[in-house]
Amino acid sequence: MNKSAPIEFKLTGDHVPLCDLLKLTGIADSGGQGKVLVATGEVTVDGRPEDRKTAKIRAGQRVECRGVTIKVTG
Image 1 (cartoon, rainbow, N blue to C red):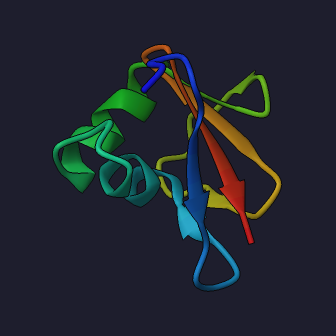
Image 2: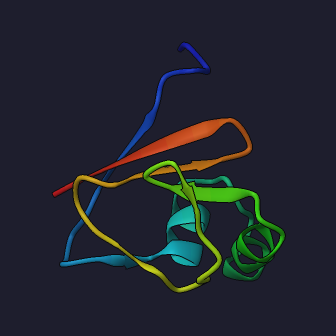
């Protein structure tokens, strides 16, 4: 598999908190580590830095962290 290919994450509800998304996709080992990644400025949402650990991520958004892109679908 190509490492630069985006991860596709399918929502089961209306949204997912950002720190949980990082955990569910394997970028973070835990929700706590996800919060640290956000707090240290390592996460962008739709190309903009995101500092809200529990930002509501919805279908159509793109999250990037540590060179990995997550494409959120509905």
